[in-house]
Length: 194
Image (cartoon, rainbow, N blue to C red; front, side, top):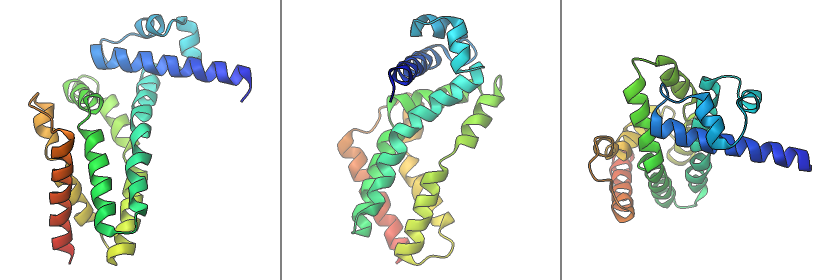
């Protein structure tokens, strides 16, 4: 990568870091491109060269948050043992969905859904397509299921159940509790398939 390309990437990462900080602390509606530019230590003109609108910057920020995790939990599906693969996936999946960052994004979307419906629509369009495809392939290959969608949805629902308490400000599961929850939810799934 050339020096110019490195500098552009460095600036883009600074913008995304500043945007994440501002969006998660102030909310989408209250966040300003001026404030993000100041925090990123760039001019507003430079910010608009990288991201032409606040909604595009918000979407890029969400994508960056998700990309950091998607590959991490999907890679576990390559493990030889089906149960171990599912438990490893489930644990990583839960760690992301119970992370402070993800909980903050969910709260922001809930709080601003009525006033700023476009941010929720953008978030939903970004959906976990790669993860869904990976899980579908895994379930078809490992369990010989033709239509695994409902089983996957039910399992994911079990994995995400503790998130409701976290969204309400109650305690979040620690790593050991996440592992135990992942094991129990996966064992329930496996009982239902076999």
